[in-house]
Image 1 (tube, rainbow, N blue to C red):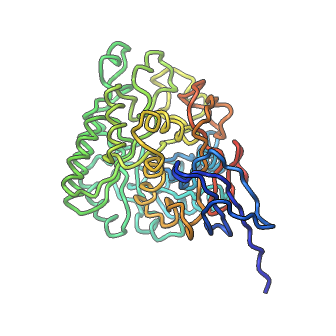
Image 2 (cartoon, helix red, strand yellow):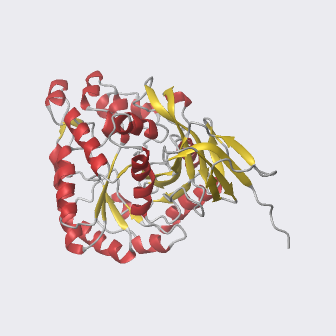
Image 3 (cartoon, rainbow, N blue to C red):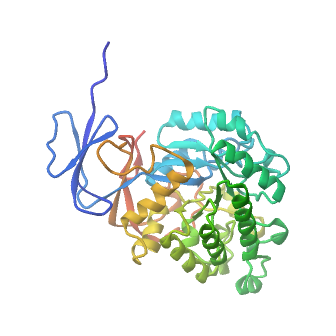
Length: 435
């Protein structure tokens, strides 16, 4: 019986977690040695990584890949390329596709396509309710038992507003050892909402999306999760008040985790003064005070992780009047740079902190045993190499996504992903996906 020859790669002079430079030897997808001056084997490929930082591959709990249904804006393949180029090795594809991922057939399609493409681990998120209508629980158990092994459920884009449905969902997922990820938005408080409710929205004549619409649902769901003993994850936290609710809930022992998006860390509602729909997102961009509070909450662990809420849209859905525009922004290829700009450069996080919020905690929340692992001998070689000294200018047309709706167009951002390895396989290098 013949066996395939071993493949070895030596990453030379890299700095794990931004610390002392070492060589990392990878054989057959596993880290086999870490040290100074590792000898190059005859069959080894050598990668010069002098000055680069090595981090565990990033995990995104909140990605919209649009397939099936809107392949004109993104596909699992193009989204996987964008993810690999952004340093991601696992992404969670949200359920608001067409048809909705509320059954085993759809989630297995998404999972299989991700496997076929092989650039990142694509994990489908199952809908909480049938058709995202908030009226009847979807086939949670069937999706959990499918080949996709769904462990994260969300109606993202819509809130599970009915408290009885939410309680039942929490009870059901507790038995499945799964997580409900809630899009926190009390719909009766956001009818016709177009922007953060505040002075700017009033001046612009845009209907307001009040902070309390998010905070009220988060408080309610934390109480429900505590009562049931289930796990709750809060999507795209956008307000200072929500961070305060989460601190209170965690202090009570509630099994709650939460994410923040790069755009809510960096941007604020002053950008809306141009009426450019590229800045329209749900939840909306909030105030500078909110953004500052979110950065602090991420630094102190109140917010567990960064999730992109990568939301590609066709040109006709963004290049139109504000009220008709679809909410959402691209995020996969810019996330690391935004975290560097908002958290690393100001001293709120070091590189170990970046690993925590972009890899380790999201992997723990989602229950991924082979992601977010330490850079250590015997561990999977699922690694992202980052150039901390690089600066690059964002051009939507040059990103891997089909869509181009980035709010960072023309911005010069710090830090760049140089290479991404998924279990030893090089999936992106020097701005190109490699599979």
